[in-house]
Amino acid sequence: MDKKEIVLSGIRATGNLHLGNYYGALSKFVKMQQDYDCLYFIADLHALTTNPDPAQLHENVKNILAEYLAAGVDPEQATIFVQSDVPEVSEMYLLLNMHVGIGELMRTTSFKDKARKQLGISTAADSDEEIEKQIIGTNSNKRVNAGLLTYPTLMAVDILIQKATKVPVGKDQEQHLELTRRFARRFNSFYGVDLFPEPENFNFGDHAVKVPGLDGSGKMGKSEGNCIYLVDDEKTIRKKVMKAVTDQGPTEPNQPVSEPVENLFTLMELTSAPEIVTHYRDAYADCSIRYGDLKKQLAEDILKVTLPIRERYQEIRADDEYLARVTRMGAEKARERAAATLAEVKQAMGIRKFY
Ligand code: TYM
Image (cartoon, rainbow, N blue to C red; front, side):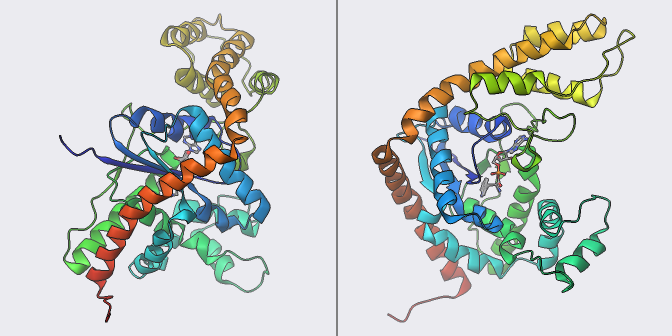
């Protein structure tokens, strides 16, 4: 039998999962688990970059673990683990950092965005030099921590230590994947080895998913405060969808669609049947659309996805014994492979034992 391709992905432990996480990542986790050799983890070390409250961090790990399981990730098919349960990752993170440039890390979009937020620099219009000056400058007692800077190294290690070739993530993670490929090539060529394959994003369609928010522009994200959570109750979801930003409505046939309305169509394309989307697109084109109807339909279709997950979630999250069993089993499998890769990495780098 052919060996299955290795898939790895993770989600930061920073709260509950929203529809962006679901369509960008989690729904793909479930779809891929039969055909690939899948490892899915909860990125608790990555969550430390924003210095969370310790008690809350553990609760967040538990939330995401229960959400993976409630959404249908099957621990008998896929390896589910907590990042910090695999200490080999932290060790290799130190080693790989020796081949990563601070310049390339500082130019990463997610670093600039997060650093900007931490320093309270609000406008995206600030030049890179200005941001760099503020990050390095001492005129503020706000800090951007080194963990945030080296975030992409840790993510590359998550992937490379398992030698994964497919990484199901949303569009916002593609730059990190590009860096991972670059680090893999660099390591292989520096040491003249063929240790790491180059991973790529995985989507069932042909392009990476970006789930928009309901507030008119941009993506759905926790820090944007525009999320529909998988564990939101029915009333909350209806309310959030009904409040979504729209416009005055089309006044001429085939008028271009504004961003807030296009965002609703995008959400609908992800959650509703194709004929429903066509119906509302046609209604937009001939100006007969009523946004209230579209929103009601959208809320209905979102609930069909989220409510069953919410129901299973409550039960699974309360079952500490089950969660312990799943993560213990996952950690064992993930560690076995990680340890093997780490040994190869050390060998390549010249770290050898006397005993
Ligand atoms: P995180 O925790 O920010 O997000 C988890 C996953 O959800 C996707 N996502 C979205 N996709 C589409 N539209 C959106 N609005 C949206 N919001 C979030 C993200 O693309 C991601 O797939 N660095 C990663 C976690 C990580 C990781 C890894 C992922 C750490 N190591 C190794 C893959 C492999 C992150 O912060 O994702």
